[in-house]
Image 1 (cartoon, each protein chain N blue to C red):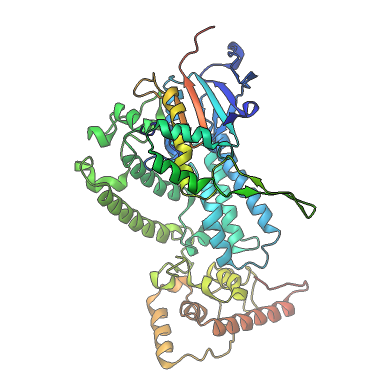
Image 2: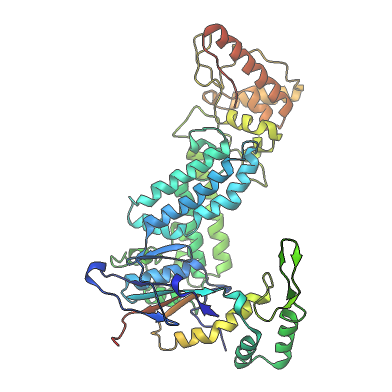
Length: 147
Length: 377
């Protein structure tokens, strides 16, 4: 599955300014009457392996590559807290993407990709119904039908 | 992944708030707050789109707070360090979203945010020069920086290059194609009143003139090289002309040989740390502070006839070149032995002469005035 066109984060040929200019144009053109700005809570830290694995599988990643990703990102990772000089027992890390890893942005985009495809499925060619830049998202609607 | 619903925001656009009751939207059983403005990707959006005035204020606040923090402990920092900080931290902060602000400025020439941004840029230059340095255009000239508006003017074609290299799947490309921008239609488009901001990006800026006839089929790499070369030439001309109309009596030190290759600024920023601010002040024309000498003339950088100084110990060849420089350079610019020494990185000699001159000035003024004066840079 290809990346959704409305995801601009970590991709060449996109930038924050193109997203900003797009949104401004949609407002000026009256194609974005209702705008919802989304804020994900700890986006990178809450990506769990079971969900990521499922997403990657659905997007056609082979088991061998999946195993490789898992080996690179998750095993033998643990953390502990130090409070007033006392160190807690080590806890295994079961979710979250590694900060600084070149693989993390790709996995994050893959993880969110299905959601973006769903959000933009019925959009007009020139008027996207959502815009994302990594985890900064905005939903756009020209009208909202009354309930 | 979960949403932080209280931090989400819902805006109804192009509707007066008083006449419109927004829907109640919920996410995970939490109501999304209805807001009048929201900061998305570092830019403030309101019901009419980008809030340019607030955006200008936001950028200025970020830079000013950074400056305020650094002022506390930057007293001993040499101008070279300050310039590096300016280029790596303050300038990128101030220039974020600048192509869009400049496009808005092109549409409305009296854009309010532009004044605040220019003032903040000037404050940064003052900080680099140290103390309460005035005339920021001269500092900018020495540091090889363009005036703020010109800098924005240079960023604009760079952003246009970025637009031309946009991914085909980028929604903005579809919007621009639908608006028949020059890269698709090969025709200049008029400014649309309903969307003046986007209209500014429909036509290529002047730096693209060489390729206008075949813009669509020119490889982006070739286009980038040509445009960047064009911008570099323009920058050189613009910087050289920066101080010309303002201060014809100032020394033009923008000659390439007098600039530092890596830092691209005047050579005095490679002087020993303790002397940099002083030498930069000299370059900026600060000498004498406008006081009168015993001979009746004002002290300034060219007032050397009452100033005895130690022999700089130049070789015959150096002396010849200095005399030749004096002959070739416009006498109005007051080219002195100190400038020659600075141009040739002879820091010790330059420092000795400035010390001697400062002492002479102090002695003369002390005998001439009743109040105390401190000569420092």
